[in-house]
Amino acid sequence: MTDIMDLILLQKIFNIYSWLAACIIMVFMAAIALFYQKKFGNRTFFYFYIIPIIVLVIPAIQLFPFFTFQAEFIEFLGSFISFLASYFLYRKMVGVK
Image (tube, rainbow, N blue to C red; front, side, top):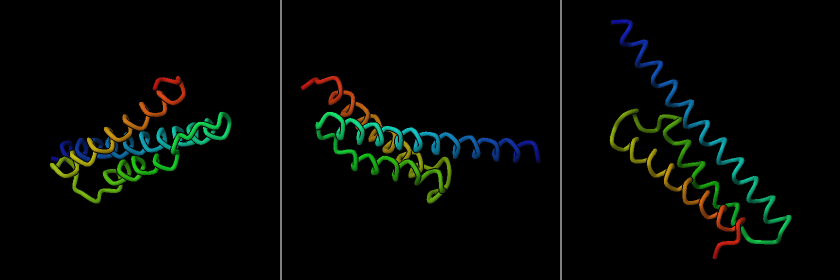
């Protein structure tokens, strides 16, 4: 019985770690967007990168119980917004219109 509880605890720790790592990556993306805006003068809307950071922190601080539909949906939403923000920054930096 304790082995199962240890595995569940380990799975929760890995889940929290992965979402916090994703938040840190998005902080770096916001810093890159701010640098690019200041250096080259193209508006990157770096302040919008706070939205995916907040959405990615929600599952990490366990506002919703793990492995429920709401938590999975919030995690998906955070991942999707992060992808869109990264793709937008990529297109800005490469010059694709």
